[in-house]
Length: 240
Image (tube, rainbow, N blue to C red):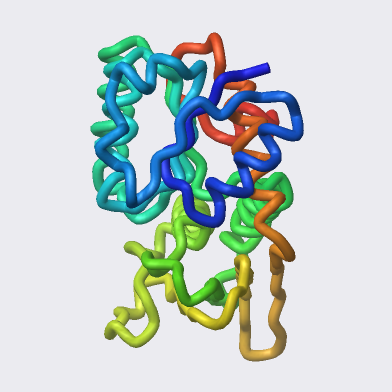
């Protein structure tokens, strides 16, 4: 049994709480927009591990506060990664434990591995040009999604002809990998990577049906992180 602090108590936080309690864990702290002032080092120290699914503007501060309190922290918040290296450095300075993933779904992380393999193959076939599409619910604030950025960065790692990625419609250069971000309804998360030539196209796609897959992965990461020191991700936990 683990004692868990939930930082961010929206749809994902509530799903994690439900699964945690069903598994026999104790949720000792639930922080949402209406009680942010209750997030203190003293409150955090009641937990074995914190799980952060907050807002981009709050994520770095939440992670830093957990590390300062000596509490292991798992974060799935996206849209704050310009400060990721600061969080990594702070974790190492404090001798703490920090686990970050843009997506905690086991299926998505298998999809990441497949994307990396396909990108390595396509490095030898310049006639094929890649493009990414991601679709999420209308309440998702950041675009493109953290998952799409992870997919793009893995492609860029194998293709020297690209100098970065960008959103379609933003005046991309020929050397930028295009990402299309769509927001509609209550879509849980769909990501597609397409490689097209003049004669054919190859696509790989992942579609989430519920939030439970993400929540289960985050809870698994929280249990896995307890007692460890360092910076980790899904590839460490899953051995991918």
